[in-house]
Image 1 (cartoon, rainbow, N blue to C red):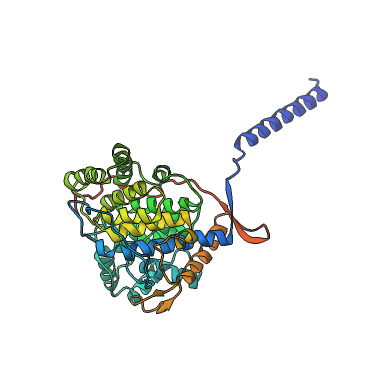
Image 2: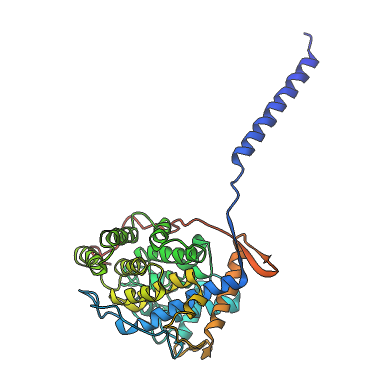
Length: 409
């Protein structure tokens, strides 16, 4: 039998060319789309972080006189206030996060191990601790570690508690433009005290703050963007949609919008006034009716009621991150000296500057940016960052069997 060696060679070459072409085509098809990036100067990022952190403290501390004062009805009028003319101080709206951030910076760890968190909490969280956080602290004395301290089985407040909102906003600040990373960090710390539905709030608010650092969109559009961070079956997703719908139905009547949400979420659904759905709705309304005005937004957050100090803190963090500290400091109501007094967490400095706290967050943010594919750059001769942007998505889904007002633990 004769063999056509030339023919075999030609066919082999032809098959190789076809295979190479096919490989090239597959490679071209599979070639990843270049990830979007955002350049920002170090000073500009510090201003946004400073704005979000200061905004959170202004809202939280100035909102205290309104805490749980307006439940069945909102306040009659919007309250006036000045911005912390005696400076900022420790309060559970800021000092849980400040404690974690302090040790994250000192120990150069973004997610402190849960065993280490228990040590930190035992040394520091012994006053000014309430509800789900208080129960988590008690469990640590019994040898229980997070996340079991935040499980519904061990912590009767874990299925609803607002810790999933007011103890996490700053994790959005240290992950600017990276909502998935912000949510991941937030979930790590939120699980100390809560689980299930409150974790949906954690994902939403950390993502919204993270997005706010770079976005200048309207509050309505920002809320829509951040919705991608939560389980679509969650109460949080429904609440945000309800708040947007109520705002558009009553654009000139914030009280009517509030009462519409109150009727559904407290009276019909029976979530309590310390829950993430009820208070999340209030923050959404404050942002929508405030329409980018920092002072006005906090007025609404306070007047809408429920856990008003926490809600004003969250609204202040979102808008402060978007506007920046220089904008807030130029407002006529601003009286705030650069001072933070700590009377609750003994291992932290008794006093420091708010600007020093912002610098701490910036150091953490730099580590987060670099760990997530970003880089240091120079912009017009000044230090800056190239941030690898992310799209929000839900990292935590609700369990099939979940707890709620109809199915309490």
